[in-house]
Length: 512
Image 1 (tube, rainbow, N blue to C red):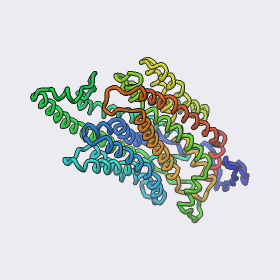
Image 2 (image 1 turned 45 degrees about the horizontal axis):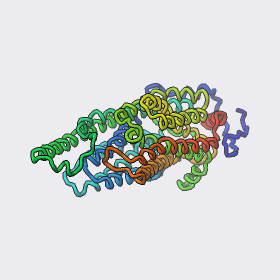
Image 3 (image 1 turned 60 degrees about the vertical axis):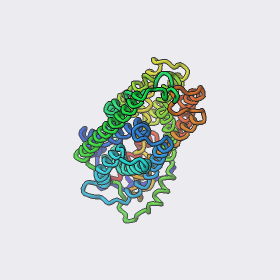
Image 4 (image 1 turned 90 degrees about the vertical axis):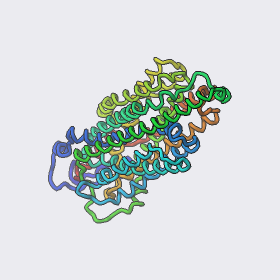
């Protein structure tokens, strides 16, 4: 790049003149200087796995735990889940604000957040699965610890996400580290479901739905000895269930501690080489406004918000769909594991694809893949089709996880070049992206549950009305397709092409 040449680098049409380098440095030297070892990438990825392990366990088992083991009523359980998710979404931008105000330490600016909050995350997670001896205040207990857990896990996840920007300034190295991270996170989701499921399965082996509903009158005809036997059995179930759920919480808490230590020992957080030399500081609120006006960020966030809603609709209603709409209740656990295994295996495939054909093309190909198969399952509900859909859905789930986290660093680079005086605002990009996706997940879960209520869903019943099956088919088929199409149309407006990425990379190398 010639000295003094004005290089158009941003889609917004702004021009930027990079400063003259102090000395000439070959491009390959820059890459070698910022190259990450296999060990560093692996340790970084291991640090994000326990969040997904715990998230998978709560996603699959927290609701049934609150109802069957903690024995709070369904309304209270729904309030715990909804308020907890909403609280977690609101804490993301707050944590992002405090991270931007953090000072650099000997171990970095982001690492102290993750290391410092980990012991408290483990304690709050354990007590989330602990049944207190009192009964009247259990709703407050679980609401308090779920909100506390959401707050603390946010204090871990937001800096961990932003850490991608401070591993290396080389885009290819960051993309590679992101691929490692997504592989381990999807694997963590699989491991979390497997660990929790295997440990607590014995608590639910006898909690099955009979083939014929038994009325209260029929139960009342049992002998006194039979009634006592059922009461003793119920007490034994509760005692055993409390024990195995605490064991599972302890195991996952131990995984969290070990993985955080591995990340701390194996990852070096680099200082920001693009910080402006001027002493002028941009206030947080002005930096926030600049971020929210950055077109690439808005288009990327809006696109994956709709795509995230679609994926969440499929995930949150899939078990209900298999149980009440297509009579696959005996196979849903294996189908879910097939989805997760497919996602784990396909992460390297999508990493290769985005490097070969570009990130935007990979997003379109990966996300579009799920649409025909989910519709096919609605119209051809059999076991073979279900497994085909599971494999294809895993491919799209992997793409939906990998691509936004791989594209966000490009957006941050673009913002840095457009606003060279802004520094330390990387956490805003990541925290508000997580905020929007969490909020979208909460809304999709609430709306879909409300739709089932309007359709006449009967809690605890073994059979549901025909309207419920019809509603589940809409939530699995038509609704996700509509959201995905909307998200992909917005993604068309995403202006950072591969040429723009390369141009930004050259400009950033001049700034170093």
